[in-house]
Length: 125
Image 1 (tube, helix red, strand yellow):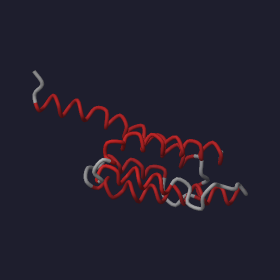
Image 2 (cartoon, helix red, strand yellow):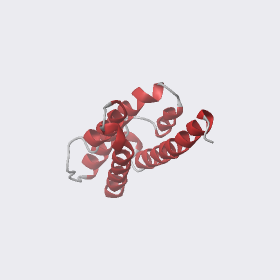
Image 3 (cartoon, one colour):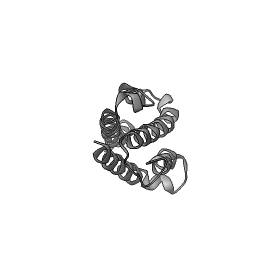
């Protein structure tokens, strides 16, 4: 029989794994950006582990990553598909848990955002 504690554990494991992947991809993307072009520190991604605070910080981090990627591309003369690379998709992925029906595809949105970040990382490296 599944107890409430077991159900909570079953739900927390996939979300924790996704959060760890999220942090790793965001951090590696920031590492690809030269220090002078970063608008946040590499280790600021670890703040996503702080409950409640991470709800707001995720939105801020998406914006800072977008700015950092833009700054790096501009300094290298690389033309991007957007002036705010990844910001709109990242913001939607952050807001999805709070929007009815959209919350059902939030993991998919997050994965698509992370793939996009990884593509930007390859482009600016």
